[in-house]
Length: 242
Image (cartoon, rainbow, N blue to C red):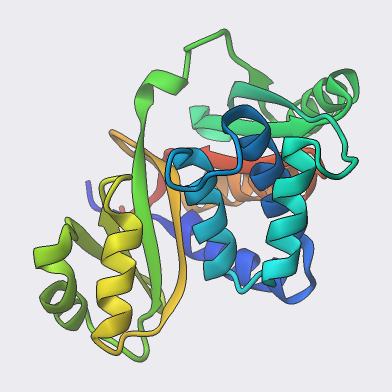
């Protein structure tokens, strides 16, 4: 079976729209705040904070916003206390879903997630029913109308670039989590314009859905992404080519 991971391209377009209206900044601020709270303000010794700050920079977040978020995390500025929760779920067609949440009200977040899943053909799974299917990876997105896979591979292979995939009009460059921002810098120095760079989760295997099943799954994922407490949504389906 060969398929197409349509969710990757839809999510990328949604991230661009979120960035344009500033919504993505609120999620990045939460992550920076929690990373600084849990590991301190030193980017060199706090790898989670470094990832959060680099991701924020890749989305063009102003440095003042980043500084304030760090200070809220360390207690130098007053801030909200966020709690981290990961929900594991199944959606239409049996797709696996990981929902990462940062919230100041876990009861509200749990109720919202359950409501969305129930209304749109999904349900919660037990602990580790889904998480074992996914691995952390570095992901860099590049405009596929400007650069080819070969150009990107040639520029980044020696720096730790592992693979490239084209989805619609974007190229997704894959790395290990530890190499993503080093590869990003090498690509930038080679003249390649980066749209975003982040550490995300990718499934070991993809499940194939029909167009109709995929449409239902995408609707659920988009609604989950719009939930204020949700930081990220990961899934494991592609559209089956029959």
